[in-house]
Length: 310
Image 1: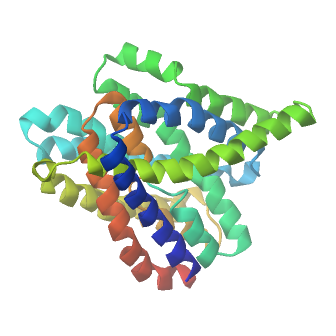
Image 2: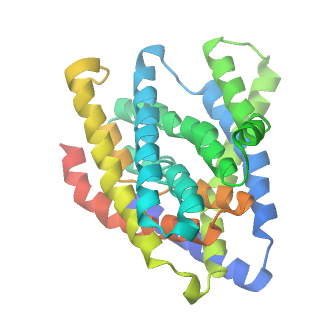
């Protein structure tokens, strides 16, 4: 019941964003930049810098990153066959960047807390950073690449504050840097505050994007194929890597494979809408993918829950 209420809160926030945008007509590009360039770096440096990252568990973070890379590659190739010539280029970048960036955090963590032991929840949160690293590196690069050359895209990535927040956070954690108590408490306070702002604002901006959509803008091909890639391709790639691990890598122990089955049942992350608005890369189509997959995720997780509880 608790997890259902949390999911209902997500949908209420989306509805609130829809209502706010209908009446206030806020500039979504500026709103998106506030979240991407101020809120996201504050969140990233605190969670990576002071998260409980155990070196022996980093293989799970790597597995999540590799799954995202695999999904990205297949989406990029598949989009070239699915979308029409006039949409092919930009939709390749949008789908390849958005679908791997599953909402394994704000959507997946409450489910993990409901279904998993405390130890497995901690490992899930660690693995979740693998998706975050994809989002802050190749994911961001693909959004930038839609309107720039390779060198320009790399410059945009190197100028992206959240990328350097990720580097700084990992450096603080693994180099055991002591920044003095006042500095550390300030970083943690900003990170915790940013988490709430991002949770509320990230969901609301989906609704704000929907408010700007006209019925004629709804592309059913995007809705259908976005969810096929999210809820069929993701599990297939996860299964492939889990099978490879069982045969060769041996990074997972016991029931740790459940971490990746839960990730495979999560919807497309709301960050995709923020990036799409920032780079003017089919923001309406990004909103459709995020919203439709979020609505489908509840019944899908309901079907998956018995398997995850075993």
